[in-house]
Amino acid sequence: MAVLTPPRPKTELMNVLWDIQRKRRFISHDDMTKICEEFHMSRMELEGVITFYHFFHRVHAGKFTIYLNSSLASKQKNFNKVKKAFEKECGTRFETVSNDKMFGLFLTSCIGLSDQETAALINFVPFTNLTPKKVRVIIEKLKRGESLDSLIELPETNIRYTPPQEKTIFLKNFTPGTSLKSLTKFSPEEVITIIKDSRLKGRGGAFFPTGLKWELCRNNPSDQKYIICNADEGEPGTFKDRVLLQQYAALLIEGMTVAGYAIGADRGIIYLRAEYFYLKDQVQNAIEEAHRNALLGKNIMGIENFNFEIAIHMGAGAYICGEETALIHSIEGKRGEPSTKEYFPVEKGFLGKPTIVNNVETLCAVPRILEMGLEKYLAIGTPMTPGTKLLSVSGDCHKPGIYEIEWGMKLRDFLKLIEAENPRVILFNGYAGEILSKIDFDREISGENLLAEHIQFNLNDPIEYSRKMSAVGLRSGGSFMVFNEKRDLLEILKNITDFFVKESCGVCVPCRTGNFLLTKKIHKIELCHADNKDLDEIKEWSTIIKQSSRCGLGKTSTNALLTALLKFPEEFRKCLLADSDYNQAFDLDKATKEYERIINEIENTYG
Image (cartoon, rainbow, N blue to C red):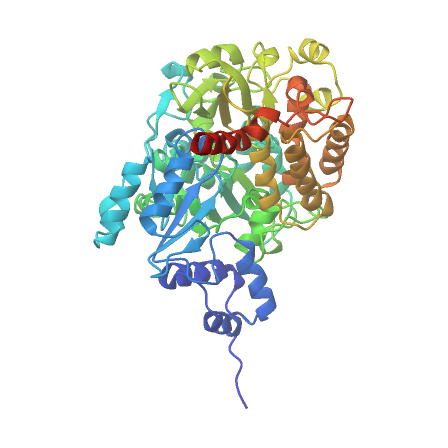
């Protein structure tokens, strides 16, 4: 009688898929057969997982798989020229592989390098500030057999500004173990109280109170609990977590360890986005260094039963995995689809156990609060949002990069700080954020009024909006993209809606279908084929998507479009059909230009 071998844990599935993808350049039919046998999975289930993620391929993706960023920051720079250069030098078109399978060209959304565009990943090695000439040199060297390792240049951190030293929280020297020493004086409950009193909120954009989340998790009894660091920094225009991982990995590790002590967890997982594969070894080295210094492992700081270990889990390209339940499903070896909120992760999260999911910046703030003390921390920033905020700046400004600012800075002052060039449109908080205009310049960057969304989407009058919103703070997950007067607002919005169409997991109809229909509406407006009814339908559909989508991706996917309609109504109205149904996009002179050229040519030839 045959003895059935037990299945491998599905938590190992993503690692196996990555090993095959990186070695063979695709996951073959035979590979799938072996995986199904090892994990006791059906082929259909495995196919569903593989095809969910952008970076797993079922056909050969080229010896050198190239992903070129196609988001707004890239298109503001050299995107079109660089795209053509890659196609010329590699001898193939994008979304195809060269005949010799040497090069595979693919477009992808933001890769966390918006301050150094145009950028691309080649086998997940970053190449920044690309020009056609740089592309030619890189491809020529690869054709000659030079290794990618010899071409590696890690991206610049581009830290442009920090507050005075006494008010700088993140971007300053850190001595590992500093905050852990204080745990010998505090019980887990006291640590949670400190974090609650600090008013620290989630820095990924949700702004849920961190201390409350920890308290809820601690109060759920379980034999096993988990700390998960969300390093899936997929919001276009955001790259602050990349800089923290590059320079302050030890700070992140210590923040996770403190969180483990507070809630009673002994295991931590860093969910690192695939676009940051080049940082994996660096983060792993920081974990090993913490072990050597007895800052990870068993009985940390001599505290009995204070045990904590950290492992890295790689994502595979799915924006939706920034949502905490989707991220958990991904680590479990499933499609990264968000779940309905029957249970929150603090109740039943990873493998059904109480789980904390916190953003990189959030966890990096924790050791600093313990290190500097609650009183000093609360003296920085504003009453509702103490401390500082990291902002990723890109677009039409002279100083793109990372800024650590004290909460409460006026938007107008921040624009001066980054040396913005004739700012007209600001995309604040990424593609899921809001469009800002000159009527917002006197607002402050803070979270003073948590009803901001409710106010702004129920006003139709920009003047009334300006009056009511002047006292409302601007909360941000970290993305700040500036567009000057030369940029086309409709083109910006089209890029955003296209992004959400591609990134929707497709589970709920409003998000899956609604964003597709909105893209068609914007295209119709661009062609000047739309009328006022189309604008009304955009508002109606956007509201439906916000109210009925199951996760944050759908609920925030129309923020930019709705705020653009409010702030820049003239941009839409000028493209509408006239009362006579005359298509304003029709240019008679342009339409007859070729005809006139041919007639003139005939006349010149035959007299």
